[in-house]
Length: 68
Image (tube, rainbow, N blue to C red; front, side, top):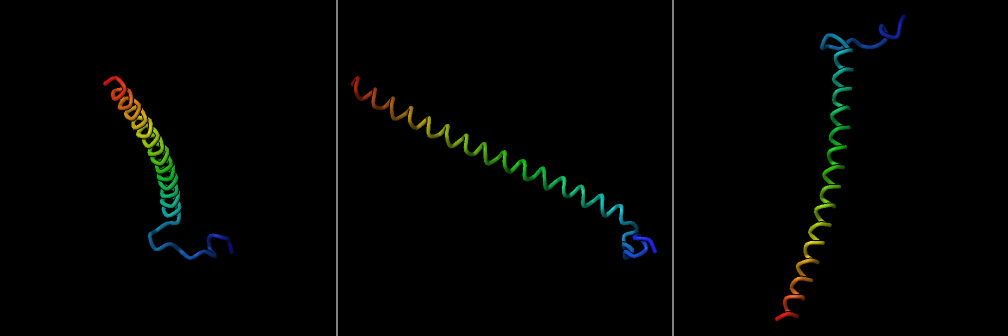
């Protein structure tokens, strides 16, 4: 008895299609994780830029007050 004969038959007509679908789903999960990591990195960059902008605004306000 071969390994294929010992496995239950897939009711959708072929285990190859199921394996391809699982592999495709795994690929999409990897892409999703990669994009989520990119989004988190960009959120960090945006936060750093906001902090930098606030620092520049504070410094400019101080300089304006000094000149007035």
